[in-house]
Length: 326
Image (tube, rainbow, N blue to C red):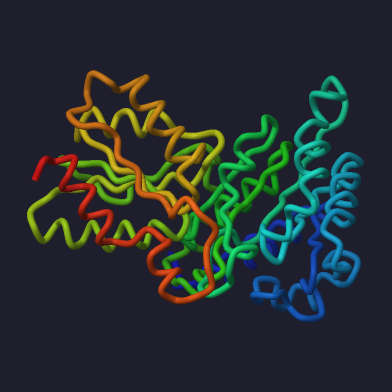
């Protein structure tokens, strides 16, 4: 059995279920308690679990991220919510230099089972310092796992897996997708970290994406199908570790790949995928791997800048036709 839930409610359900299952799990962050969360993801959790397990913090990301790392090293399983990953830049010292390195620096004596989560990417007219994507930043750090998913069912299962994981996990969400609805199974279930999902099978071209760019890719796929172009649509779900096997197997079938990635083109997730495909699937490619990224500049405030900056369905459709030589 399944129900229709929003992304925010599926995340709430994941955290609540894990907190009922394991009393070492707790949530902390700005406005997560009294205000029910900046995006209402933690609505009702303070009432159920109390102020010792749903904790409002000062506006001090470096400070409360450090408290979370220390708690994780001492047997607890913190969920640290950032109002946006843009603000988490202040806490990168704790995430990158402490959480990610605790296991190796202690020669395996200390684990750091912590989840850092919050929205990443552009969300309209929020300008340069509030519109960045951070999947590739975090994935560049050994010791961190990175998940990025907006499908309500998968997001719930991934978050539950992240909370149970003994390694630090960064979860990237989307501010403008918290209201996205989807079928979510009832009962306890998890989604494995490190496994991509084939959202639609096809034979002509593979489109790979993640997070809210999946919505852009879905729209493009529907338009391409009307023209008789069969698209295999893959949702990465996990950025590190990346599911190369699913990507290579898809290229073996379609012989072409387009990667849709909201981040900047230089050194991003799409660049890594393009490299790995030429390494492991070169003999199967009938066209170069093509990437659709945001513009290689900071995002301006004006609506016209936002429209020109972000990937859109028309750019994806154009890229698909180019790799098909149409």
